[in-house]
Length: 138
Image (cartoon, rainbow, N blue to C red; front, side, top):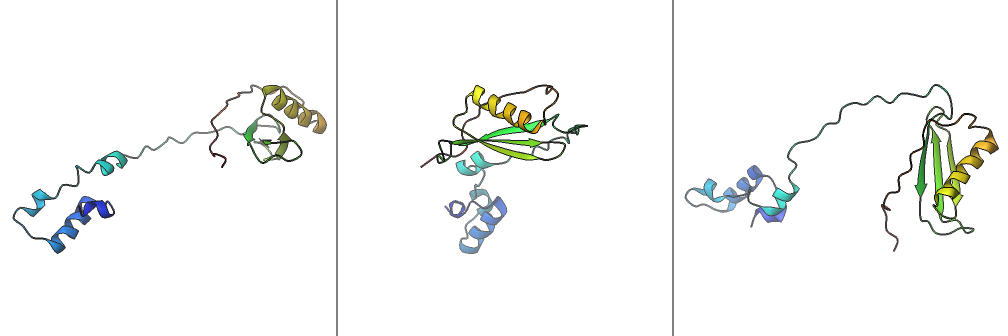
């Protein structure tokens, strides 16, 4: 009952009860380990990831990060944004798109490369992954 106020830890809950109540074997009567909410939200140990070394490309436009933003409120018929960042120079680009079809994304990527003459060599690999939207529209 006291624990449900703010779900403090066992020591704090015990101190709160000791301030207001007295009965024989009071410590045995305080049960915080059986709280379902605390058990569901309990962090059993923190996972620490190993430091990973990501190699820096030796020339510009050899490794490019791509991401798709949207759907956004339409502007001039475009509802999505293709964002690109070069890992070597940190050069950003943002291109408005009508849809997120693979051919639309590829055409936008190629147009940027041919317009700026930035992509002169084939990229080692291109991986595409569609993910669920992280925000819902009202």
